[in-house]
Length: 422
Image (cartoon, rainbow, N blue to C red; front, side):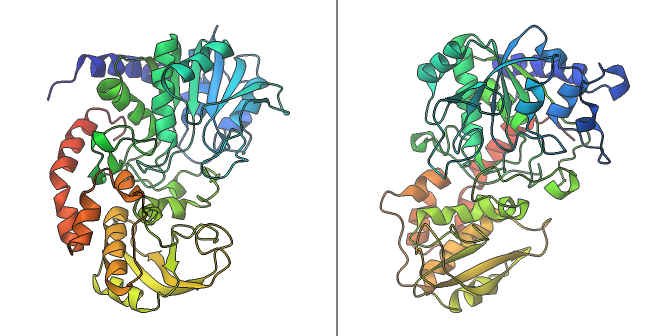
């Protein structure tokens, strides 16, 4: 399949950025704060590459950064604090996504417009803004280059990738340049998994036809968005990592884990999230209000039969333990409920989306109280009505998974054009 004109434009911008930043450190401008780029791991994030160059891609630019608490250096200083103190870059604004720039808001919230106490920089709210209203925010801020640096978790319905999409679209409308600083996909960049969004189900948990577990980095997604989905391409530069392999889980990176959102406390949470977040679309608890969100699932009236039934399916790479817990907030707050805890014992064999489907199928089988959320949120999470209607009709896990294979293969073919790492 030949790349579209937009794909070629994106590829050109990426190639330019790669040439500028993929060189060995000795060929680059000495960074002002070398401590943040000295480490034992061979991996360098996009920010580390940018900083090692003396911010070459940002010279002469008024810069605004879209980021959150995950935008940190290896020694856990925030990149906004580092860039603000560095004379090599003119940082003039910050843009906060869901949960906010400093991460003070819970799910479905943000921090609004304020001046950051640490730096004095104006912080603008991007949450639930898109198109011209978001373009107007960029125009009001006075920046000419928008930089994106947020840690993703690899799931289509994790909203930061759609903040990326919305900001790219708005930057194009406002005539701004867009720079993406890459970070690892914490659950690897292997083949995509799960159903692909149908456009009629597009929301902020899925704007475009992307697989449920996309297996891409944010820089790769930016290229995909620019080449396939945006009405007009933005002027895009992607600053790539060095030393990252598609088979790497997050613990291979040597990077500290900073929770990207309040209910994503560990990289283990990210490993299961693209499957068990589907329980947000049911009346069961997805583990919010516990110390193991998305690993603990349950409801009043569920007992050990669920774990037994789920284990009978012999889902690859995972086992299920009968568990009881009392969420401190969200569903079943303060009540002791029964359910399962997920224990992944073979990450290479584990398929989180298949696992999520298996748990939905078995929960419905063993618990008479099972119900979907009345707003059919499950359809927005899976990207169509197919998963819900098939499970309601008594389909098996294998039958549900088989139903999305053709659309997944089509996505895989498109995805392949935009991958940047071997």
